[in-house]
Image 1 (cartoon, rainbow, N blue to C red):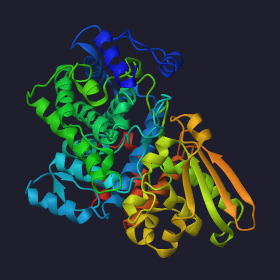
Image 2 (tube, rainbow, N blue to C red):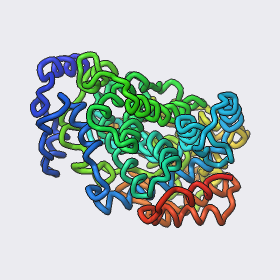
Image 3 (cartoon, one colour):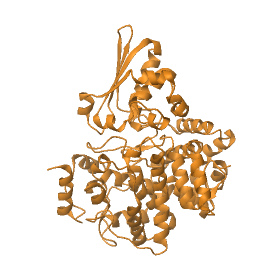
Image 4 (tube, one colour):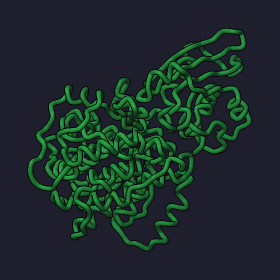
Length: 504
């Protein structure tokens, strides 16, 4: 039986029997590691009801301190990336577009003095955060998942929460609560949907991220369970995004659109707009239509149990490019530094990976900064030449340098049987540096700095933030204020200080 038919068959048999169904080995491991919360017995029917009631019932006090602290690093990261993205190639067209709408508003567009309606501010700030593909990533659990590529959790959620917090003069605790609720719903939906969803070309940040945005906005609005289910139903009709757009300006658009989608869905639900109350599990609902099915056990009783930030974790990127590049890049950089390898010493470079990595990192001869973000050949070439790969190394000018283009042809990126056998839930990368003197330097990695296995501290995340702020030529005084304010977010009575530090 094919995976697609298996999921359809499972859905038909299981229907809404949410406590039953086939349990994968990975789901069993998750269940044994954490006691399940009781299944809601009243209210809306089915899985959507469970998600809606989690959103409604979550409280700031229910979020563990460890989760709150991990979230602060991603929030700081998101704000830094918004500043960097505000000077990206998207800036001119996006600001002209926002001005053309003629919509007056009070929500700030980060890195500018422009204000707009919450939906459009969320849209713009989401594009800014994802513009450089430098934002955090959820880490997959299932063996059939592409590790680290389920969704970018912060970008669809932080922009609408920031906009609504600014307008409502909400506290830092309110922002933290809505942010964590949104990220949790987004990540668990991404984990639950059949791998076919991503494999067939959907961009999970645009799709699952829309549900995270809706969950966060529903929490900010104080919607009840039925209204929240309606918001999820509306956003299911909005969610979209295609992997074919990777390496173009439309990949960040998809992330920004996800951030906008939730604001629209929650606004309409608050005004009495109705939608399907079982949008997730219905025969013609989200999971079946967009993925051909889902794993009940990856989401039922898993919201906040454990929180995604704790297990399996969220990775903060050390480089502004696709996360599948990162283990190889970190290992390669370590090797050339430890062995003091110069470009003139090297004859060629081999990088073996699994087939999901080689097809996702699809630009083997990039000619633009956006394409280079999905090119292992470029990542290793620029590290060899510059010993760094920051925002300045992923510009069009950097990619088109003759020496860089020449080195692309000397990097062999291929499917390695060992990496393939390790599974798609790992980013196994096998590096060989062939030196001109005949010596071969070898290394292997599955994790990079910033992953849960090798996490960044708050101060290390702050250093990344400072680099983003400097790239945007943001005043150092404002940058340091943002670092302090996010570190003490739970003590902030409103977003006034953060808004002033993040805008002109």
